[in-house]
Image 1 (spheres, rainbow, N blue to C red):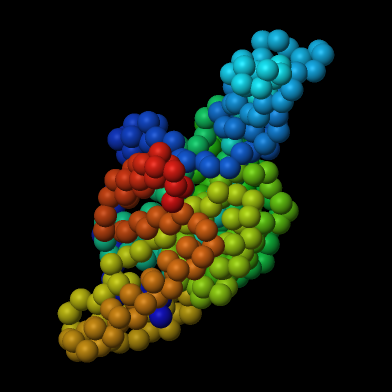
Image 2 (image 1 turned 90 degrees about the horizontal axis):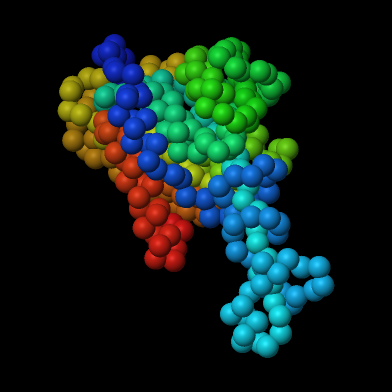
Length: 333
């Protein structure tokens, strides 16, 4: 399906993050279901046994064990002294894969798709960065040519055409704010992007177990990015945030509409007064979104859809609440 942007001048839009956003997000926390292998003491269950508050397995008592770790219920049932091992809490490392290819520089709702990507990155940052947790990002603006890692404290990267940029994972709110400024300052470049190569940057080199968040419109063919997504899920909890504009789902009846593919520069004129054309477009868009959803489901990723004509913050809050509700009922999706 073509990625078409109407040739219209965008109306001024408010900044994607408001004071209420930070107030709401500060009360939430993204669900992390797998144990981590970090180095610092944090708020999440660690991979290895050791000092901590998370209960682990019981084993038989051996001379030298701390008697304060005695597991009295198991000892009473087996009549053999047992001690309860604990699992160390670890810090969370979150990585963002942010697609800022040319197709994201479009929007007919309240926001541009690019602005929703930045807002989603800010929301994930607020949900995860605390207590020594670390957050980093890889940004794709086209092509598939890797750029060396660079320091980004308070400075926006300046990738050229076809550059994938890595912002190293760091802890602290000041560092996180610097990352967000760098993301917001990244210029969208012309040309087609490679979403598969962007996601593969999170697989190589292998990173510590944590959360991987991919933010894109996923308009690239599913076969390009589905396999890297499956590989990513082997080691991390994966969240896919799909950014959608209403004009990508259906066409309005506005007569002859000039549209341009932002990645190839091709210009077309579409006769939107034809109801059969509008229906074919809507059917193709529905099939495309179903293919995207099926590929994400097959990769084992949690799927959140944000639209440019809706309140992204409300959708984010509902998603996190639904995750928590599913978790309490014994499921994770």
